[in-house]
Structure formats: C-alpha cells, structure tokens
Amino acid sequence: MNGGGFFPWLTSAYNVRHFPGMNVGQALASTRIVRFANNGRIIAVDGVVIAGNVEVIVRLNGRPIPQTLLFLPVRAGDFVGLELFVRGPRADEAAFDYASQVENNFAELQRLEAEEQG
Image 1 (tube, rainbow, N blue to C red):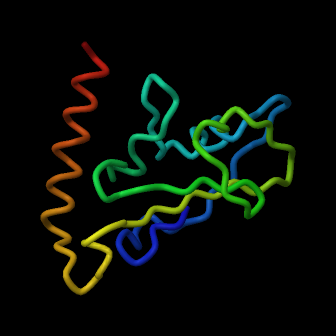
Image 2 (cartoon, one colour; image 1 turned 180 degrees about the vertical axis):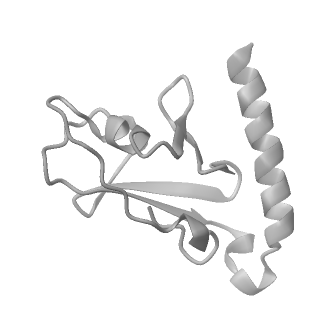
C-alpha cells in the first residue's frame, strides 16, 4: 500500500498467504484494509474513501491494471500494489486541508455503509 504524500499513514507492506486460484481482488481483501462495493470496485482503504478527488491505482508486478481486472489470477511471489493519490485542484499539497478531507471521507464512508446495508 502506498498512501503517497497525502495519506502517508497508509504506506505499509502486507504479506498475504497465497492460495491456488487467488486473484488480485482477493489478495487486496486479505490485507483487511481494502473495502469493496457490491460491483467489485474499491470504495475505501483503511477508512479513506475512494471518491471525489481521491483515486487509486492497482498494480500487479509493478504494472498498473484497471479495477475491472481485479479477477486476474496471482501466483505465489507476485506483487500486488495499491496507490492512493489526489487528483485535481487539491493536488497542491500546500493547499490541502487534511482535516476537511478526513471529515469528508468519514461522511462518505458512513453513507456507503448505510447504502450497502439497505
């Protein structure tokens, strides 16, 4: 996981136990910090909601892959990476309001959880 300059607390390495037939999405789910929507797309990483200006890049062995390919199989020894970044006007880190972003992410996460439950 790579949180970059905006989410440095997310940057960490995870070792997950490989099993036959494992795919990229299952490897990410094994970290227990990546949440998925019903359609299989990543909606949050350790409480940071992937919405608005916050985006994610999924990598398999260093190569970016779209979220539509989370079903790709992984072999023992493969590297699955996830990078979070902020796109757009807030990409200027000096102007970034961390407290506001955390509040917005928390509110969005609660909305998504409520939506999933009913």
